[in-house]
Structures are given as C-alpha cells and as structure tokens.
Length: 256
Image (tube, rainbow, N blue to C red; front, side, top):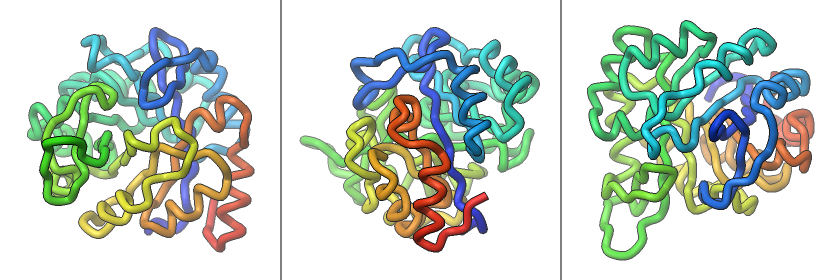
C-alpha cells in the first residue's frame, strides 16, 4: 500500500454540469465542475477525478474545456475519463491539464489500448476504470463479479477479477474500482470486491461506490484500497474532505 491514503472527490459530468444519481440513473444537477473542483482543492483533496458519464454511451468526446479551465485553478493531480478511445484522446487531455486518464469501455473493446497508452505515456498515466457488479441471472463468471459498461447499463460477461489482472499485465497503472451495486446508495463500499481485487493485483486500487458516512472509509482501506473516492457526500455537504481524513487518521492511517 502507498504511504499516504488519498482522498479523491469524483465529479460526474454531463453536458458541462456535475450530476449525481443512483446507479448512474435519475441524474440530478450538483453544480459547476470548475467551481466544485476548486472548492475541493481548497478543502485538501489529494486528487480530482472527472468522469464524463454519458460520453461512452452517447459517443461524445470528453470535455476538454472543463479540464483546461480547472487546470488553471487546481494544482493537484487530475484524472479524466469518459469517451477516451485512442492514444490521441489521451494526448489531448494531457495537453490541456490532465495528469492521468481513465479508460473503461474502449479498453474492453480493444485491450491493446491499455498497452499502447502505457507504452507511449507511461503506466502512471493510465487508470483502468472498472464498473463491476455482482452477477445477476444467467451470467457465470468464476469470481461472481462481472464487468459492465455504459454506466452499468450493459453486461459484458467478463469476469472482473480476471480483467483487472489482465489490465495490470498490459500496463494499467491504477484501478478505479467502482461497485455498481453500491453506487449512489450511501450504504458503504463493497469490501468483498475490494478484497478480491487486492488479492490479485499489485497496482494501486481506488475504492469507489457507496460512501455515505465517514465511518465507511477506513474499512475500504483495511480491505486493500490505496485511495477512496466519493461524489454525492461531498457535493451535497454531508461531509468534507477533512472529515474523511480525520476519520482515517483516527484509525491509524497516514493522510496528506
């Protein structure tokens, strides 16, 4: 595990506004992305993650403008995902201020994208975003966790644990592990899923999906995450970045 636990607010962006819903549905407006990112920077966020939540499903490129305006005000690492399909997309985002780029659907469609990006820009640039859920119905993966795409709307039949191992081999530098079952529910992270992934990969894991109270964060680190990510609890003022860091410190974890 890395020395200091990172606390990362996630800004889900749709048409230039931050939105939040449950399981990526019934999205509600949560504010201006640049203003929110600047506020989280002031609060002591370690990184900022932007996800263009409808880019893959509506085949739109990621929001270059939002990223470049944020980079003028926010001086911590910024990860941007959604609609990234080629190394050229990655290049554009890095040039306008992103430090890391998240890939999901495009990497599933063409796993060689992972190695092409890692070879050209370095492993540290590539974050594999994994929207995983417990299987439903007829699906039978070995681990019981399945990868989904299109904000959880589409099943892939791919075993999530197999996929993170393969992605690490191909050069992914980090895993953003989002539990689609827990997303937006505020009932706690999927600790079983985090443990299952931690057992198989050495690269950092960012736990995502389900944070509802400060007490939810330390168990995610104990389960094997190197960083914790949340959205609505920060957007709606349920807690601050400092509240989460204080709770982590209480449990003996080092924070920045």
